[in-house]
Length: 160
View: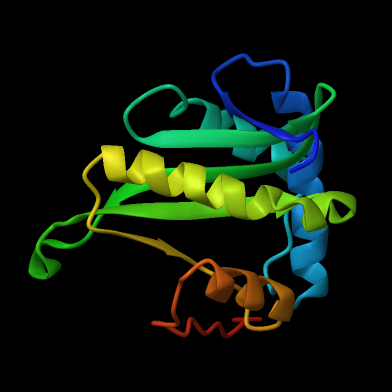
């Protein structure tokens, strides 16, 4: 990861502004990959407000890939619980991950995933899960290389 370091982000961190910018880039990419629900105007700020509440606590983590004080990627994870009929197991959920395309060949994405997985292990999780758009071939390939396997197909029908 030549010159790229990982940094855990907590409430009020100055890098959060840069992560917001990357979040907007992520959702532009997801729109291109076929996401049917567009992010609302200012959605990155709404995401930040809700995510920041969990940082530094027991239920959420945000890690940034940083080069020369510039965030070039981020990964966000939270803890969830399976329903009682599935044992109520604690599960790690990777909500979002994005690396600036210019930095994708440095392994920052994989390192951030490993960071989240280690954090999930310290929290006693049963497993780790995530969602990938079916039209995001690059994302599906990345997650497969990270050891994830397909389990669920989510479908959507617009009601308009």
